Image (tube, rainbow, N blue to C red; front, side):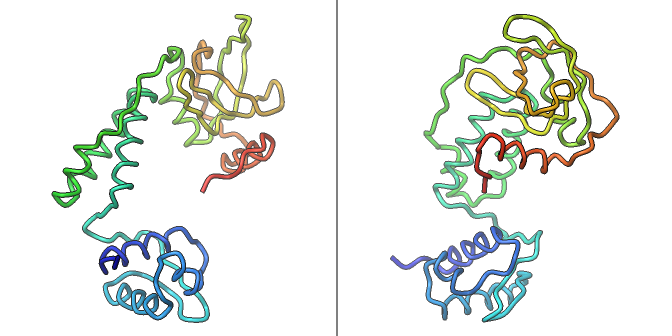
Length: 231
């Protein structure tokens, strides 16, 4: 089946967005399922339409950040992924993040062509309600600390019910069906630790930054836990 040209060009832009360094035309042709000759024509067409694609045959191509192709288009699988993801966030995240997911989906729906908007609104992918432990900590404050790379002072209750005072460097939050977990470096234990939000009795966002970048902490934690990096 022949892929419509507009859909093919959009797919090429999506592939280019995945690469930060120049990628060869041969690789792009394979990923988009076209001949090298067609790939070169498609790149020339996108460049003529204003797409900031830099490079040339033999050297590779790279798309400068910030480029958008109006109107916004998604495949059926991408629509279903957006709906399923937003519904999962609405069921498992805190109210502010759940509202953010709903607002984002509404903004996407507002710029979709009618046919795709109907697909989005009629999605039959459902998310079951989870039996989650009630949070004792404000996740919005924790997310703020992660974004600012600031220390958090918390009172944490262990499995036996004993409280301890901790100063942590939060850099990630894990969302599970029954619990939510803050991942951070614990100054008391001098190691990475996981803190269930239903056991954080109190917390205070400090004005002091922790000395490491959160991306570096995340990378080191993944290596320590044997977790592969996400795409």
